[in-house]
Image (tube, rainbow, N blue to C red; front, side):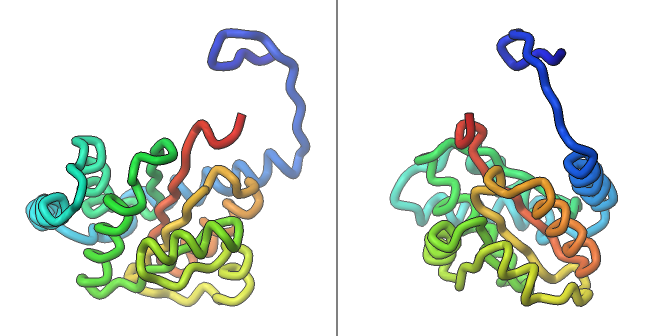
Length: 187
């Protein structure tokens, strides 16, 4: 018996394969802690976020500013951004991170589980978006010396197997992964 967020009991089951996939993705995320150089120093990130906020048509929230700074200064291979639909996380936080990463010589990829989501993210970041499945099939994990950033929108829609495979591929490629999602996307 398990207890959900509301305190209600429910029965649960899974398969050995699902447990293995979840252990793989957790292991890859843990292995990536502190394993990549920050994209920018805290001072550089603060200036970049301030510039982006000033240039924005809409005022940035403190949470957007904090998220962008945290992503730019993180030394973790895998980071995550949770933001509800309509909070402008793509046009503020992710666009700024992508632009600043590119200015520091990083190759930025926009990924998503579906073609339409990949296209939408790619357009917002002025990049060519592709599905996670295509990325995994067409990009052999070649060491990028920490100079690649993979931004994955709608990450909660990925299966545990695909997430584990993506994180393991990032580990082999020495790439950084930013998982973006909305906790209310799935019931």
